[in-house]
Length: 568
Image 1 (cartoon, one colour):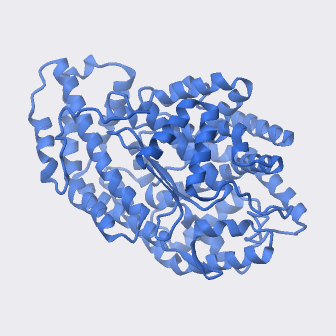
Image 2 (image 1 turned 45 degrees about the horizontal axis):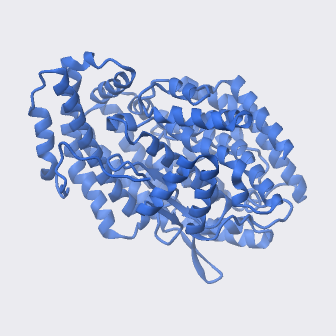
Image 3 (image 1 turned 90 degrees about the horizontal axis):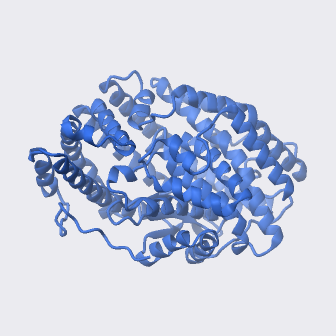
């Protein structure tokens, strides 16, 4: 796939951003220029869009380089400089630009779905903007970066080798229970060293975020964040109903799956080092060796589904837009970072040779395909879609790809096991999503809570959405602070329930593919190609499913998954 950056119409090709002064003239031109016709307004929008794309991409590369090596002071300083010295000016000038856009009389001449959504987002941004929050938002970003540095430095030494938590995870699947216990205890003790510091960081984040909400006229950060995230299509009450439906329909399935494994093990209860292991004593699945093999196999899987999907990954490989392997100093997790100007995203992850890494690669590959499908939309705003749509792309790709996993697993038994484990993991992750989301609601509805109260609430939710089948005695700290591993809580608050909503949509896309794979994939591509030019419900409908997280739909989809599991 040949990719070239579109010629710029506004920003200098040789622009280097070292300070606010380097970009101030572009904001000044947008603010000072007159708009006398519809055509001039459309050109003004394109210039503003180009500026957005250039700035987003500059910040993206700073973030990518920082997360690849959290010990790289130069990369960290570059990111912090943008956040602390440049971004505050962008925020202030950006608000003035939003006001100018919002007041333009030619807005009414661009009355289509895409621009109605765009202009509504602008109105929301204006309503939420407070100059005093600029510094607070920078402060929150810096605190969150400290979290990444701490987690990235959580290494253990096992058999004389220093390894990351992601690399250690494969040992928690080892058939030898003593190996699992030894590695778990090493992780437990290492994480315990940082627990107090992470608690302090989180307290600071709550204080800063609560003040941001108060400054903007909200009672709590939850209500502020719902508005800021442009959640136009559902409410807080919908989230609570989702929690209840997961508790009613999914938790019993989760408990049933774990109970059956417990019987196979022959234990009365799991110990914390048992839950990831195979009850039949099989070693961990080994679908690949190293990041290069993971990528090459993934390209082959994507090609089986659709040549376009494979071309996306091939292009990223050619451009060096991937960093896949876990290594010392690397930030945790995985992401696909959209690069709005060039149009080719960047995939970051921590592969260590596990079956879970395959899912992460395919998941982020789904996000990448979404970026490719929308890269030619007219405005940057159209490419910045809500998470409920973004995660539909990634989670659907996981399930659509299952048909071709023989490329990762040549043995039939391994293939069946991988599929079974993935579908079971969906039944297990939905309660976790509900737990994390319910936890966030409580945290920000009760911002003055103590650390002890927070720990008690976490365990209460663990009882509500968990199985009660694990004996944590002697390792209560690992249970009490297990939420520390969820980077969303620290870095992107309230961005998590989208995984739950999108998982339901993805199951619908997968169901469609079992009936007619070609049509299902074409619908999937059609829906995603819309970017954010339509509302969420319309995008889902174009993708062949409904944006439906009702109790009835959750029950129906869970039954479908159970039936498929029984057929494997």
